[in-house]
Length: 311
Image (cartoon, rainbow, N blue to C red; front, side, top):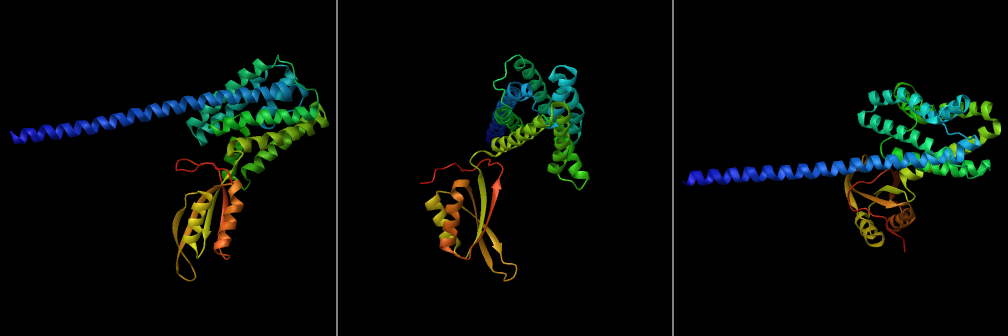
């Protein structure tokens, strides 16, 4: 009888553990579905914003963006065919390369973004341009387009196949991604000079510069964060001051001097751009010989890091 009771208890525990696993799996799936929907909604919105920048500001003033979008604008101008046809047709080979080299998720997000951009450009095309001032069109068109493209890139998509080629060539040649993209875009924006005039080509360079900076703002954020490592003989005092005066969490990393062999406490901390000067002030106040390295952080996931204001 006792053995049967033990057996029942054992089975109950197994079923309870299995139930907890199922619950965790369901919660994980719900979370992933929610994130998946959010991602594609943001890609949709990003494509809408980018299309507005192109069709309301840039294209009516014969100002183009770089990459495949720029080639598509010129192709649409020459043939008078809808811009969306060129966006889809010219990007397909690059999307295939992206699928092979980067992955399925990236390829799907990119195709979705390009199709959305094509549809939105058709929607915005009949809308009258806001300004005929080329400089204003380049600046505001660059801001709006860069905002949309930045949202798409931040959520795992792309509108420009030349970036995919650049990533592949970076692995196989001595040229960096930035150098390859710059070469493509100088060629494309230079070609615009023959088609629209050299003044429009120069305005296109202005728009391209604004777009690239706006993309950086969207991806990195207005208030950038920095990872800081401090090597100091006053590690405890410095860490306490950082926690008290900046309100930041601090982590000790164990280090060792290569020459002396002495153990060292290395302070690791993440701060905002506005807190960097205060951090340096604290570090050198506690130890004038402190060694400090500061590196920009692309993204922060998890932990208790929050933006704070400096008083």
